[in-house]
Image (cartoon, rainbow, N blue to C red):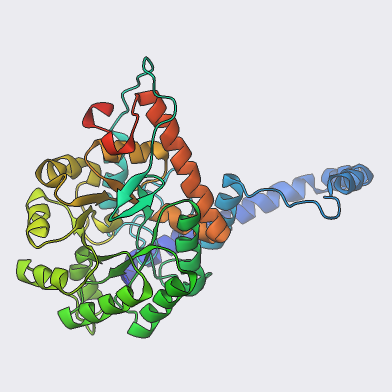
Length: 408
């Protein structure tokens, strides 16, 4: 969802045709049921009306009463209403219902890469331990000199118009993401989009500067000159690091021939690292060899990522490749990972497999659309509390010291 994506029009037509048929058949079936029960239902409703009115009156909040606190169910319900049909907000975000829906939030082609992210993470199990003295585990970590509440940050997610149904403006979305992450004690990201003119990117950064929150600024793998120009703008806006989703290069170039996006060799990576004063993060690393190359280029961090399964079909899941990458570069560069992160135990799993922190993508999108910055904060705080619970029940006292022995 980081690039202005395209997808096979015939597949989209089939998906939309099937969806319309399903909705039409549902309406016809529902109409028959309603017709058969209408007389009885009307009589019951009339009889119950006085009691219902009295109950509603007694349930109404008193003048000056505080509104009910936002709940997880509230956020998910609203997100489902706002994001449908680009996202169904499924109980488990496994890439099945949205396969092939790019643009949108699905996985490219068959959706296998998205599903592989989910399935590879689900195969990892936690090793339960309860005979120990861990009661209040420490979840905070250091991120490039900034302490964050737990090892999870907002991933660079953008394209509200072409990926998220155009129900939320870019500035409002950025405010929800970075404001909500800040409220939860962590950082969000400001995204770039292949089709976004520099003015759009500047507006997002202006919101970051206006709010004064910490955030990572992302850039697409454009020409060297374009990347360096955007990095300078990010520095001026107060970003704490620069990430480049190098995995956007191939498909985005085919999707938008008028835009120059390209893979980066070692020399070009070195040039970009030297061109910014901020920590530089290479996002889209899926092999140990390229993790080593990023390290040799001087990158401060990498993101083990297949772009949410949105750029190349049939790639392995990130949980599958992470351990081998960590074996090569752990402690030498900061290792992020993404891929269907939703729960606190997902964070524990990925950290146990070798990550220093996770990036949260689609769940952040739902939080923003379902409750703005409050929704994002609620989801991130919920994830942190789930992590605390999981650490207690696996005997992990400190998030920085979670080891591979915590999982099986």
